[in-house]
Image 1 (cartoon, one colour):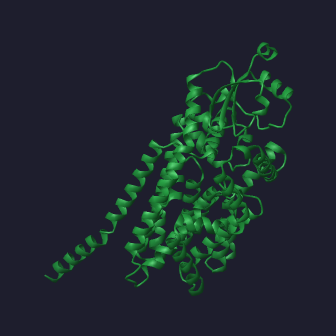
Image 2 (cartoon, rainbow, N blue to C red):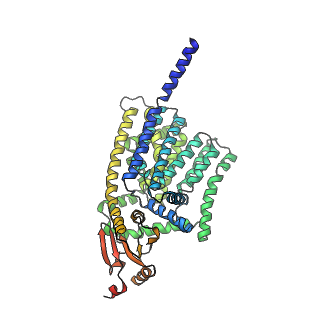
Length: 480
């Protein structure tokens, strides 16, 4: 009877231990389904996602590494593979959704390992699954979802003591975003200072990430004869962006102008404000409360606290130094870390006022409200893109189309070779005319006034919002 009773108790305990898997599974299923539905029923509003996808298409056609421009190369190759397999931009959005799903699983496991609390892990998972910024970028063709997954995987493996294995996701992250270079070294340095890594092990784990960085330097050297070409190109890009703002000024709304002014003027605290909004004030306060406590107590969450603060300092420094445009999306890799810290702090409280359930409910409500508002804005923002793309699809031309907007190129469904780029707008009308004739251009797409001055003698055949399509007049028409 004793043995039988012992077996019964073991089975009963096992069943109880499995209970948390049901809410976890429900959250994961809902998060994945919501992301896939969002991909199907919305249009990606992010310009760079389309641009990277287009570069992936061009890589397949000629393999020229110049298509990487100043972006690290790995994601363009992912785009190329997905295009080869599916021919559809939706594939990269589904890829991002899958990466976001994997990130949630890794975050849950990381929370369990660091805190030993299923409650903390579940709260972290639930809130992160529907964080508005994370959710949105899990449905775009951008790098954020993939990069965040790699960083979380690397941190989890470091926490688990599997340092050599952790160098694999970190080395991949070093080929996706430049922030990965700084994060990888910093995480290993902190581990070494905590005496979790010997000097030999510290050198060993840096080998793969160093090879990744070296590969990018080599690609720059092969194409441009300068391994640091990307740094100079980045400086030129930011300089051109600031110059172009003068052209765009008449087309920018008062709200956009105010937003840009605040972003520039508040650069030292900009990302603190971003986290305050996209996390929501309650998570923000509880997260930084946990950061301070972890630093003072030197507990197991100390690594996470230090990495979170470092990442915040990193993206802030890049913005202040003029090496970043300060987009809110740059804050995304820090969001799961801050949510985990806040969740741990809340679940550790013995308070009837702020319970874990109330904390979760408030956070989800705030997240869904903000997500709804952003979605409404994005629908309005992408509608002109859709309509311009449809016009091009329904009004075919024998010639080529001058267009610098990758979303229009991809959404139109026309072959990429149908389009041609010209990034300079400060050229003479004669040189512009010669360029059009030489390349057989029959339509010019202007956005925010780009090319408008050069197209004054052409016929505007379509106009919607910030977009105008000009038909290039034949030499006879221009003489008339």
